[in-house]
Image (cartoon, rainbow over all chains, first blue to last red; front, side, top):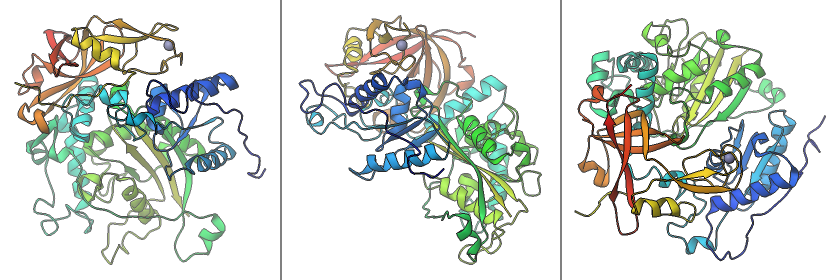
Length: 396
Length: 140
Ligand SMILES: [Zn+2]
């Protein structure tokens, strides 16, 4: 069946008040009133929504609703965003990824001038979640993720030293990638190999995370092109096939992270494996978002590469290292290669280079380390261990 | 000394909570349909999606869920570093973020997950106070 008429709009409703409400309203309230109304109108329970489409606020909306959608589109390109959301929802439903898409809008052009703090549609903004967390001195990602390390240590009897192995092994990979910031003393004052003691004795940022448990802060630009098979086979480059893909989210604000030792990568990887007809045992390479050592360690558990509580052992026992049975983060990771704030593109580029056999051809003439992998799991983590996207990639 | 750390800006949804803090009360939103307390405040109950939500006075008591020690901070908090941030499981259900008092940030090993905590309030300005939690009993 073609994509035409593969989906229909089945209801449409507005917030209780529109125009010039007597009592000023926040954007999130306008969203919620209309979502409640369209749910009542159609008889579709809010808990049945499996895709959320909005201009810039999708994870906040899903979190406010307490739902964990498997398709999150927050395209924000101005007033036409919502027509695009319907287009994207049609594609997602046609592809069989979701059944029920919520396309939602809430904007308080009038009220925002009358509310302290505006209450507008900026992501985060003066949202209720932000109000209840902004007073407590947290300062960016490290100050949040450290709570997950404490929880993992408490629940599984692990230690920060266990996770330090992730930093040490990832640095070893960086020494094989001349484009890595921490490749060597030539690339950075503190570059080159490191030890567990180096990691644990580094400056404390947010206990139990020292500086070397945390990723770099760098610049990066990257792009990939995706094309249909006929085109892919006609090009001079080697194709890397998208065998599986999945996404999910558990929360936006860490306040709503039910289990601090688990992420939605469990669900997103399950969806991706199922689509690919493959499982964790079939993976020959893993590129796991390593904003912090704890991120990579938990993700290895969530995507089924290690039992719960034992993800760090992949690094500690040398499996993830050069020459190991399951290379992980072969570019040197966000920890030692490059991390610009959003590291997902770096993961994609390394996955392409490894699976297309071009790692040694290098970028701008600088060669990297080639593995023999023909299958790869890529897992990106966003926010505060909030959102995850998994890809299963294969080569011919 | 004047309160020199970030002060939240109430919105209509959250105003009852901040009003409560001024009187030393930890007000919590509870759904009248499923009777569950949720945190942070919502327009729709995150458990059953009812829009019938009332405010109740909470006990202000809970237990430590997890924590970290912040060695790097900005603004007024920079002067207090290192300090302990913590997530608290409230007796009424759901979880709050706080800065934990009554603990030694230089000895994180001495802080016990599961220990009992109780709320206290610090006046931030004429309009609201900020809730903090203090360890009241070594536990778990
Ligand atoms: Zn409810």
